[in-house]
Length: 118
Image (cartoon, rainbow, N blue to C red; front, top):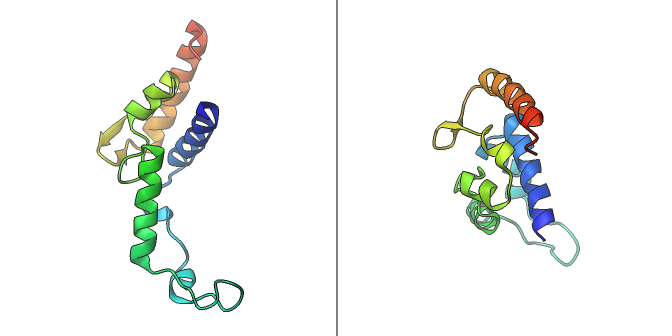
C-alpha cells in the first residue's frame, strides 16, 4: 500500500510542478447541471456543494492540505526527501515561480545524484 501511495503522490507532485491549481479539481459544468438520462442512476445529479465535499474528503484521505497540495510532513512520511527540497512554497498554497523552481530542481537533482541520495 505504501508503494501505491508513493506513486500516487509522485503523480500529484508532477501535476503540481506542471502548474496544477485547486480549481483544476473540478468537473465540467454540464456534469453539475444535468441529471443522468438513463440507466440505474437515471434522474440522479451532482450539485457543486456535493462535489466540493467529495473533493475535501479525498484530500483528507490522501493526507493533503485543504487546497490539495502535498504537505512536507506527508513527503517525509513517504521517504521522499529529494522531492521535499523542491516543493518550497512562498506562502500557503502558492509555489515559487516555475522558472525559479525549474532552475533549483535541476541543480538539486544534480546535487543529490552526486552525493547518492535517491
